[in-house]
Image 1 (cartoon, helix red, strand yellow):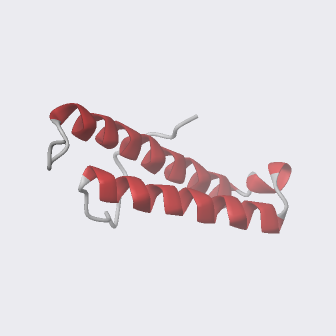
Image 2 (tube, rainbow, N blue to C red):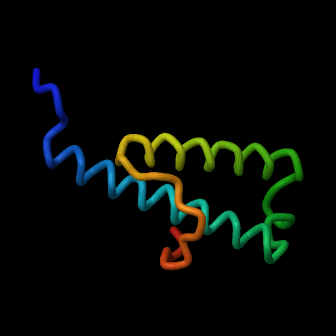
Image 3 (cartoon, rainbow, N blue to C red):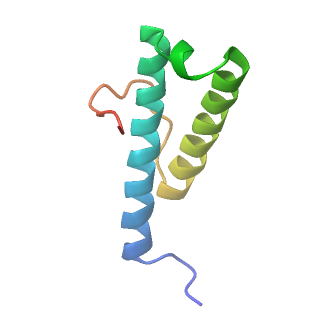
Length: 78
Protein backbone atom coordinates (compact mmCIF):
# COMPACT_ATOMS: atom_id res chain seq x y z
CA UNK A 1 0.00 0.00 0.00
CA UNK A 2 1.51 3.37 -0.99
CA UNK A 3 2.26 5.81 1.81
CA UNK A 4 1.10 8.81 -0.23
CA UNK A 5 -2.11 9.02 -2.27
CA UNK A 6 -1.60 9.12 -6.01
CA UNK A 7 -2.34 11.98 -8.37
CA UNK A 8 -5.78 10.61 -9.20
CA UNK A 9 -6.91 10.83 -5.57
CA UNK A 10 -5.44 14.32 -5.27
CA UNK A 11 -7.38 15.53 -8.30
CA UNK A 12 -10.62 13.92 -7.13
CA UNK A 13 -10.30 15.41 -3.66
CA UNK A 14 -9.69 18.87 -5.18
CA UNK A 15 -12.79 18.51 -7.35
CA UNK A 16 -14.95 17.44 -4.41
CA UNK A 17 -13.50 20.29 -2.36
CA UNK A 18 -14.46 22.74 -5.13
CA UNK A 19 -17.99 21.35 -5.15
CA UNK A 20 -18.30 21.61 -1.36
CA UNK A 21 -17.09 25.21 -1.47
CA UNK A 22 -19.56 26.09 -4.24
CA UNK A 23 -22.30 24.55 -2.14
CA UNK A 24 -21.27 26.76 0.79
CA UNK A 25 -21.41 29.83 -1.47
CA UNK A 26 -24.89 28.76 -2.60
CA UNK A 27 -26.18 28.48 0.97
CA UNK A 28 -24.58 31.82 1.87
CA UNK A 29 -26.49 33.35 -1.04
CA UNK A 30 -29.71 31.76 0.17
CA UNK A 31 -29.12 33.27 3.60
CA UNK A 32 -28.22 36.74 2.32
CA UNK A 33 -31.24 36.93 0.04
CA UNK A 34 -33.64 35.53 2.63
CA UNK A 35 -34.85 32.86 0.18
CA UNK A 36 -33.97 30.14 2.70
CA UNK A 37 -37.23 30.95 4.51
CA UNK A 38 -39.16 29.53 1.56
CA UNK A 39 -37.49 26.13 1.86
CA UNK A 40 -36.35 25.65 5.48
CA UNK A 41 -37.34 26.24 9.05
CA UNK A 42 -34.77 28.26 11.02
CA UNK A 43 -33.58 25.10 12.80
CA UNK A 44 -33.46 23.09 9.58
CA UNK A 45 -31.45 25.75 7.77
CA UNK A 46 -29.03 26.11 10.67
CA UNK A 47 -28.45 22.36 10.66
CA UNK A 48 -27.93 22.35 6.89
CA UNK A 49 -25.35 25.16 7.15
CA UNK A 50 -23.51 23.24 9.87
CA UNK A 51 -23.44 20.12 7.67
CA UNK A 52 -22.19 22.10 4.67
CA UNK A 53 -19.45 23.75 6.72
CA UNK A 54 -18.34 20.36 8.08
CA UNK A 55 -18.15 18.97 4.54
CA UNK A 56 -16.04 21.93 3.40
CA UNK A 57 -13.68 21.46 6.34
CA UNK A 58 -13.28 17.75 5.65
CA UNK A 59 -12.70 18.17 1.90
CA UNK A 60 -10.25 21.03 2.44
CA UNK A 61 -8.27 18.74 4.72
CA UNK A 62 -8.30 15.91 2.19
CA UNK A 63 -7.37 18.24 -0.66
CA UNK A 64 -4.56 19.79 1.37
CA UNK A 65 -6.01 23.29 1.23
CA UNK A 66 -5.85 25.89 3.94
CA UNK A 67 -9.15 27.54 4.88
CA UNK A 68 -9.77 30.48 2.58
CA UNK A 69 -11.11 33.71 4.00
CA UNK A 70 -12.71 34.92 0.77
CA UNK A 71 -13.69 32.77 -2.22
CA UNK A 72 -15.39 35.27 -4.54
CA UNK A 73 -14.15 33.38 -7.59
CA UNK A 74 -16.47 30.44 -6.94
CA UNK A 75 -19.74 29.93 -8.71
CA UNK A 76 -22.82 28.46 -6.98
CA UNK A 77 -23.37 24.72 -7.16
CA UNK A 78 -26.94 24.87 -8.39
